[in-house]
Length: 412
Image (cartoon, rainbow, N blue to C red):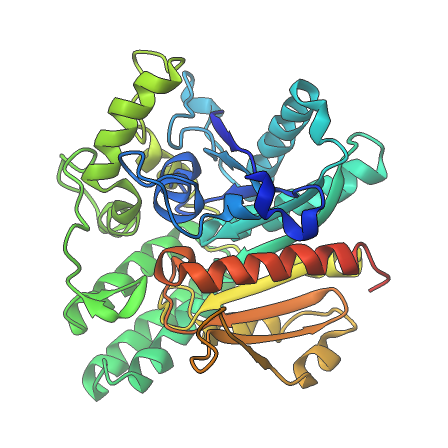
């Protein structure tokens, strides 16, 4: 399992305290955190080693992990070792974390946060629960401070059902197409309800294809865009897809494996790192990672989030206003299903606007919280919030870190 640690630049640490350590988990499944998250979102350098403004290392140290195994530069030599469900992913990540802390014990007492994006949120929630359990059984010593779920695939069915009203409200579906999309969405919901999870994933792929055809290829990561240039990556999508599922899988992963990033990771980064086996290419097994998880792809983890809240773990949910695939309508729907006893008070809380420094007149987003649950909506941002609104994302990160320090593990 390949990882990449970027340490905080000292002069910008939060209130001159010890810099927290953030584990960044990318989505997909099969998207590389050491690649995309590091070099195209929050790390200190862009592709080509160009310094990034508003990098998260201004506030925190970041541990990027290529997971599940087979993602990025992580690899398996025995196909049986690919993960097939979220529990297996969390078990691998927990093993990794123990190994990391054994090698770098100076981070044992460092405030630890998990921050995630997309499918990474589903994995992050499960990992957070595994950490809590390991702490309770004294199997792990770590200063765990909370988890942040960014535009996260927490409840697939709720997102599937939200796409229809979302696209209708944005004038992207007229009545005939709307009826067709709604019908496929309901079939997907029924398949999940009947326990046909692999079939539900296939229907999800059909639904994405149906929506793409009806909307002139609306961008799943930013609903303002269509037919986005550079989505295809010839480096790893050289063969034509053999199924609708492969086509949808590749469409979603292509952004994370664009040619410039692939060339950079397999060239300059590989050379600089110097430990990658000759037979391993960056992202070479990513498609297989996605396929092996197709039976778990449509399973929700709402209960996992509930367990975290009940355990007193600070949980932050954040969404980009323009995101389609994990749209805010779907996020609101799954959050409304939480059993957590503080939910009604959270729902009744009034959102407060927040602003980036030097731009007081333009609202950057809205925030609300109750006890150990918080939510941010970042305006004018899609699925990849740090790329779309880097200043707002950095401000949000600072809020999340400082809130984690204040809230700690609370009686929820």
